[in-house]
Every structure is written in structure tokens, then in C-alpha cells.
Length: 134
Image 1 (tube, rainbow, N blue to C red):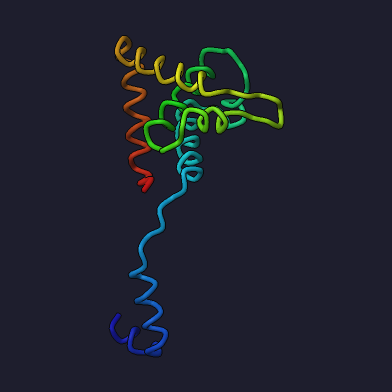
Image 2 (cartoon, rainbow, N blue to C red):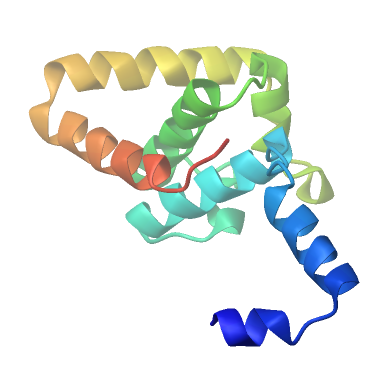
């Protein structure tokens, strides 16, 4: 390995070292939200399009509520921003801040009353923690 490094020009080595020492850029809130969306959708085996639909089937509603809960927990997004993120303006589907607030309250209530639901939330939380959203 050292022999290989010696074959590079000093200028190139300088660039390599500078690049390696650069601070890692923190992810934007949008990037974090997209990664959280993927984890939640993968867990519930639904598409991002489906989670944004105004469908009232329990499976879809719960996954959307969990998404909103995780977005509040892992990002600095406001309730309004969370509602907008979960909306689909192209299909005239909008969720507002009250939907996000209600979702958080619902998830917290279900976690305290349903051990299986709480375990699901913990599993999703572990998967999100593996992403290193810094």
C-alpha cells in the first residue's frame, strides 16, 4: 500500500488528504425525510405514493401516522412541514399541521396500549438509527 502511495504525485496526495479530512456534510431535512419515508414504506410493504394517498384503510393510515411520528422525532421539521411533506399536490391530496399533531398523539397512545405496535415502532426506530441521519 505504501509503495502505491509513493507513485502518486505530491499534489495528488495533497488533494487526497484534503478530501479525506473534509467534514462530512450534514444531510438536509428533505434527505432525512426521504430516508425515513423509505424505511417506513419498506416496513409496511407499501409504496411512497400509497402512503400519501387519502386512503382510510387502517394499514395505510397507521403507516402514514408512523411516518409523521418519525419525521417529528428525527428531523427538525415543523408540523406544517410534515403535513406538506406527506401531501401529494399533484393529486390534490393535502395534509395539514393538525393531521401531523393528531398522528403523533395516536402513535404515542397506541404505543402505550399495544405492545405489538410498540415493538413495530421500536423496529422502525432501530432501522432509522442505522441510517446515521446526521
